[in-house]
Length: 114
Length: 109
Image (cartoon, rainbow over all chains, first blue to last red; front, top):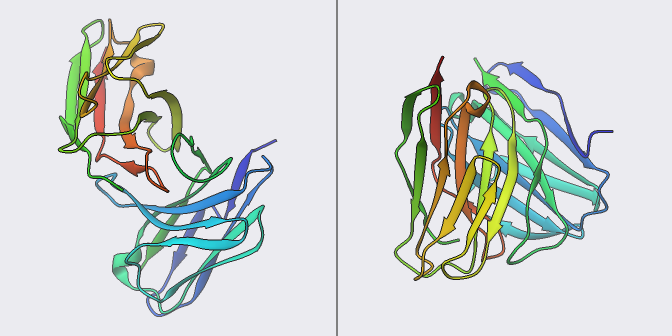
């Protein structure tokens, strides 16, 4: 069983479209995250949720809207996609929030905006 | 999160050679984590260091945390082709781990 699963694995779409990426974890963790990895492999935090509540919202355009229906799910909806949104998006989870928490990552969603 | 600088960005080695990646911060870190990402894969947690001067080993991998807790290193002895990937350090002391830019290791057989 995959601990952190995200779908789809690949997403190819046109500029201006709206798309969603889903993430689920079966580890019983309280905290979930979205990271964006660019072509130079830089992993940048986008959002962090703890028990369905938004904890961290880094400087991300408001075209990106996370939704956490319960603590096992954190979905990412992106409106009006732009070329610069092309990247690999990783969902991750940890037992709690704060220091000493190790992250468990999903396998990533490669988003290509044409 | 705090900024962690990681060098080098890339490292090519011949199989059997040693490899080291370094992670530095201008401020004291509460802890440092290391992750490995295989090509096409996702980051996988390797280890966490918390104490000043701490050294931990995992087979051919040696992890060190500096005495001042401002730097860390990962050393691989006698690299193998299975070591290929990008190694990230991450500062885990704030609400969210903040990653260095990673060191991509390329091992030539």
